[in-house]
Image (cartoon, rainbow, N blue to C red):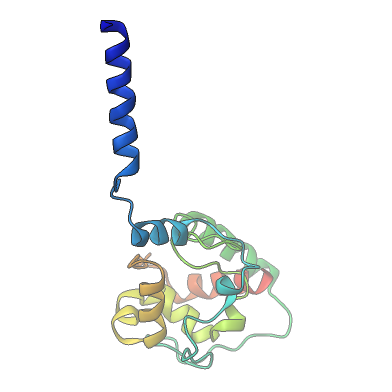
Length: 164
């Protein structure tokens, strides 16, 4: 009898615990689902932060005008890829959402100036730029870290984004 009672008590305890609220409410499940990596082909990954996001906005920061050549500067793009790999891949993937948004096609959604200002001036952008604020909310408050890059380095990363 002693050998039967302990396993039955254990099974009953498990059954009671599994039926109750394990603390994983609907909101927590949604947050977990949003944090999973998704391919950039997902509509949401390539969409603007909202329907109010202005793709012509230049953002807030030192970059006021960027001239893009018709052809990609492969040397600059190579430098940008190295910088991106070293400084950005902790939070970004090129074709999947991660901690931050997927960056493939970012220049279809944002102006070159906005992208460079976000790279160079993330704290001010998050405080003052409506699109950056929305992205902060969309990505669960994960604020972009200032990598202390120069304008030339940010421009190289921008050139790399053109190759994606």
